[in-house]
Amino acid sequence: GSSRRQQQPSRRNERPAPVRREAAPMPEMSANAWQPTKPKTKEEQLERKVLSLLNKIAPENLETIAQRMAEIELSSATELSQVIKLVFSKALDEPHYSETYADMIVILQQKYREFPPETEGGRPQTLVRLALNTAQEEYEALPKSIVPTDEQEEKFKGDKDGLGQEMGRQKKRLLANMKFIGNLYLRRVLAHAIV
Image 1: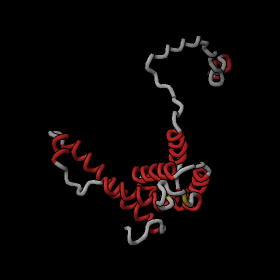
Image 2: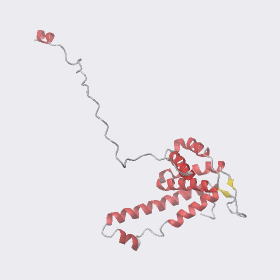
Image 3: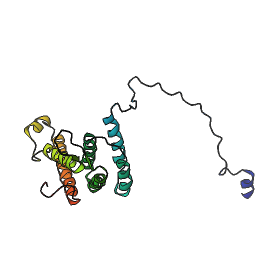
Image 4: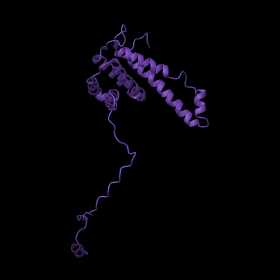
C-alpha cells in the first residue's frame, strides 16, 4: 500500500496550466448610450459641486465637508439660496441626518454672512433669511393633512398599495420637515417667533 503512494506524484500541490483565452471584442456603443455631460450653466456647476459634497456627508466627516462647502465661492444671494435649497432637500430626503444638515447650516452661516439686497432699498440677504424663506416654502408646499385628496384617489384609482405608498411618502416628508426645522430652531438659526 505504501509503495503505491510513493509512485504516484501528489496532485494537491500541482496547479493546472492556465488556459489562454482571447479577449472578446467589445460590443459597439449604442446610439443612445448614456454619456456624462458637462454642466452648461453656472447654476448646474454649483448644483453638481454641492450635491457631490452632500452625498458624502455623515456626522463623522461634517467638519471636512462643511469646510469644502465653505470654500465654494458664491457671488450672489441667488447662489446661496440654491445651496440652502439643496441642503434642505437632502435633509428632507435623509431625515436620519437631519441634525448633521442643521449643523452644516450653522457652519455655513459663519462663512456666508450677507449679500447686498437684490432690489434697491431692500434688506441685505443673509443665510438665516434665506434658510427661513426656504423653510417657509417647504412648509407651505406640504399637504395640509395626510388624508388622500380627491385628486390622489383618482390618480391611484384601484391601486390601494400605490396610494398607501404615496401617503407614506408625504407623511415622511412632513415629519422630516418638522424635524429639520426643529433642529434649526435648537441651533438658533430660526427664532422662536418664527417656529
